[in-house]
Amino acid sequence: MDQNEFRKRTKEMVEYICNYLKHIESRRVTPTVEPGYLKKLICNEAPENPEDWDVIMCDVESKIMPGITHWQHPRFHAYFPSGNAFPSIIADMLSDAIACMGFTWAASPACTELEKIVLDWFGKAIGLPDEFLTLSEDSKGGGVMQGSASDCVFVCMLAARTHAIKRLKQRHPLVEEGTLLSKLMAYCSTEAHSCVEKAAMLCFVKLRILEPDEKSSLRGQTLQMAMEEDKTMGLVPFFVSTTLGTTSCCSFDNLSEIGPVCKKFPSVWLHVDAAYAGNSFICPELRRFLKGVEYADSFNTNPNKWLTVAFDCSTMWVKDRNRLTSAFIVDPLYLQHGYSDAAIDHRHWGIPLSRRFRSLKLWFVMRCCGLSGLRNYIRHHIRLAKKFEHMVKHDKRFEICNDVKLGLVCFRLKGDDHLNEKLLSNINASGKLHMVPALVRHKYVIRFCVTAPNATDEDIEYAWEIIKEFASSLLEAKEN
Ligand code: PLP
Image (cartoon, rainbow, N blue to C red):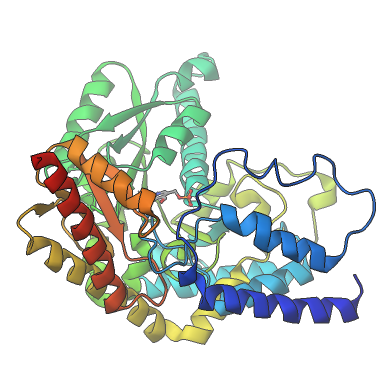
């Protein structure tokens, strides 16, 4: 494809995207295909000769689109939002065209420096303490972008593990690292995202999963008792992963209690996973949920979840960047450069070497929307969630199952889990709405998340009408 054709096809693609988004409501929110559907439609071999662009685009519409779950659909209320703001799409296009690999400062200085600046902007905007930022020359902290929240948790756990082993090795020089590793214990609550369990599995460390309180919040005392018990058994607490805005029900662990507990144990790394909720702290009135963050060693949130930025954009900050990077440093000659001492090299901040110019899209979105625009977006979603909660509360057949603080409402029909499973499967099978379930305090609940970027009051009212309609049919059928 030459530049002239690129111009032509890009314009066509922009038209296709605009039409797709404008008329997305005419499509079913979820596909009706079965596993393996695409294999039947697409050749087994890659084409030997170039194919015509129009034929490829025809296949997009006839073969790919039927297998798409439309996350931007106004009837999509599953999971959490997935950003697709136009400035973000355009910035990603520029990033793909520049196609630099920002692993060292020298590999593309602007790529490294913009990431540092934008992470300071964003960290400041969500009210993180200055220690997490690189604002002053003598600051020890800093932010970095990772591919996902799972990466953030994994990377922090790996760094914490390295330091714990190093510390133990100093005290017990004759004991093998493998033996020391077998003593390490990490902690989280049952409400933590499964990525914590996965990180522990990959780090080869034990994980103790604790029961939160009746508001699904992990409390200091529960953690303290578990850590003390483990210590008496000869185990070494080294990492605590807390959540602000849990996936199941958007609950908040009690950092103000957990922080001081962690301080009682030498070198325990306290991580805060705020993948969804963290974005909302750009609104000053929501920063009360951030209370206790000053105790944390690291913090992550995903602008690709709730700040309209397209995947992948996961932002992570640490208070002590050397504590993070020293766990990842390997230094072959071909990656060294003249400014290694003065500049930041992001290759030491995580697992991959090569890195996309991801900060461009966050920079574009923050500049095009302004913090005020982004605050309006967050507040709008919260208002709609509250509206939905209000409607559910006024129907005596239903109950609300979470403390609705942000854009997620968990609800269920009064009755058993089976009834609610049936309600959700009937609704999802109809293709009229899409929601997913969760277990909250061991009960099956239906999660209703406000996700569409331009969600309206009518969308929320429509969703509630559909839910009521299916509930009435189900309850009637049960009675007969
Ligand atoms: N942490 C929390 C609290 C989440 O809600 C999620 C996903 O929804 C994750 C982590 C995993 O996010 P990612 O897909 O970016 O790894």
